[in-house]
Length: 260
Image (tube, rainbow, N blue to C red):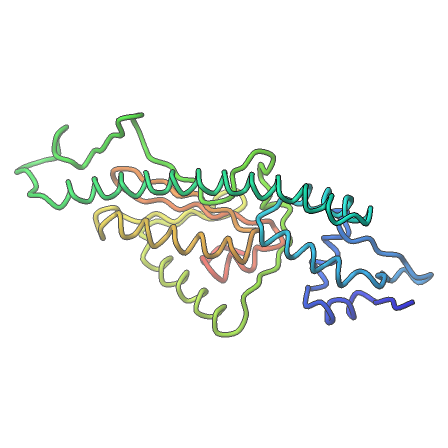
């Protein structure tokens, strides 16, 4: 029977050893131990990892993947497919909801941009000058959560493996884009588990800056689920909060200048 040490399985599967340890702790990837205490994985580990990676690409939570693996162990593909159909249908509904929210946010920004593009009144700001905006539904700042917000996730970014899917040129380009964006912020402060970047709303069209930040954050979520992004738009500023687990402090520092 073929077995793999953790380094061998990491090389064979392309999944970092740190992620393999995380999967074991999360109950997704069982491992035996040698008398010396080394992890040993069974012959099915590579295929199991492929299934986990595929499920993660669908945006499934760890507890959902764990449930699917339990069903898969029963050896009936029809049962796995039936459960996956329900989960994927739920993801479609949630994704459509988030798209609708982002479209509403984009429309709000476009309206603000159009109003600010008009002639400014003489003198100081006033109630009707356009610098203070309101929403028909509610007063106050507009907030958009860019991280997954479906029920049951809570702060799932804390438990996500600190491992990305980018490499080489693509990774370098992403880092440069974040650094360039962070360099345009007028305010910077460290917050619990992360950093806060503040962009002046008047320096560039708010809609353009918000769209750029949102697009970059969404792309980052696609490869690094351990980052959590929250975007706030107020009449005076655009604020981006970025949080990550303690083990990702180095990456937070590389991208946003945080203290590792």
